[in-house]
Image (cartoon, rainbow over all chains, first blue to last red):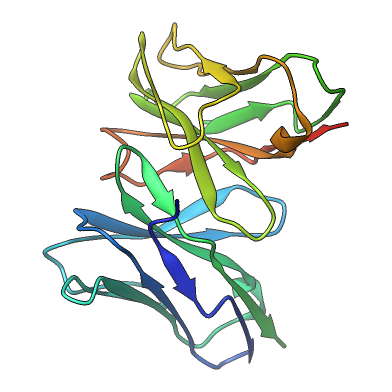
Length: 108
Length: 114
């Protein structure tokens, strides 16, 4: 069973636009993580946000967490073609429970 | 510093064959895990280990065995391959117990069972 569900499943934008992806989860968490996966590669860690944090930034990335709504969002500002990838949220259990991901396409 | 190394990158098996997927990390991470990724889905946890000599089952352990004799290596064994095990397999490692630390992933093994 998947704990996290990303929305939308796919997103297509132009370079320079912002991209927002959402993640909803079912049970209480201690941490939530976001990962990026380029085609044919392994996942790369982007940000970890703890349950007592509401917002976290890393470069062009901004992650928010609302534990009352059991949801998180990932915002990529000023997107680039190189941001084209699948993005996954993952919540902590005995390992990490991943959602199905959002496929982001950024067109030049 | 190679990170997490998985071998082989590609493999084709016949139903009923057995094989071992190799995973090695050079970061002295205590925690290692195996996931499978099927088309259009996220990763599902197969087995994990919190240290040498300690392994435990994840969400989808049936048909797979693991062992952890050293900190560096965490091989995944398919006992009798079935077409349902066709997937991309990822190994990951981290400090701590996995859920509260960033995971470092290998590039995956693409496995086809005919």
